Image (cartoon, rainbow, N blue to C red; front, top):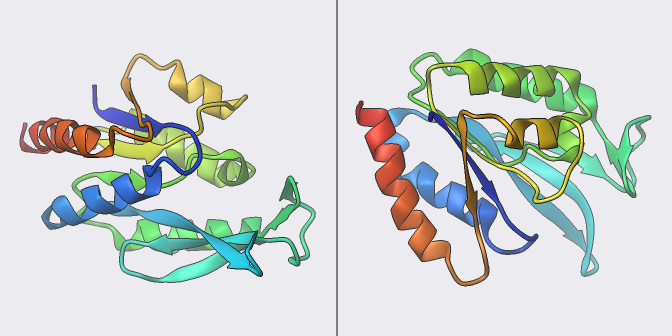
Length: 174
């Protein structure tokens, strides 16, 4: 079992957990991205994507012009796909993949959907966050035999971080 999916309610710390795993396993040259909310006047107005080298770009915003949307957010699919392509081209010596977001927004991209399936099928570990609820690709991925699903709750972040650190270390040192 090479793939780990971290799920849980919004706000329980999935992104924080991915960021901490990145710091712990930095020497294995992980490739991937983090997502973060853009807040304006106390409201969620959009989302940024950031690769592990710190390059970032806005991928969704309420004021963006796009034919793609999830809820009130318009999505820059082409910008997201260009960002992914640049990120994957740079990552030759990658030991494993960290993806903070196999979500509805990201799955609007056919290139991203194909990339995720390719990474799940690859021999390098994939550690990714995924929503608790979701249809289509999200539910298909969660049913796979080669994924370990880790549920994050309000009180178990430190415990799950310890468990995942040991599990990932074993995967990487096999």
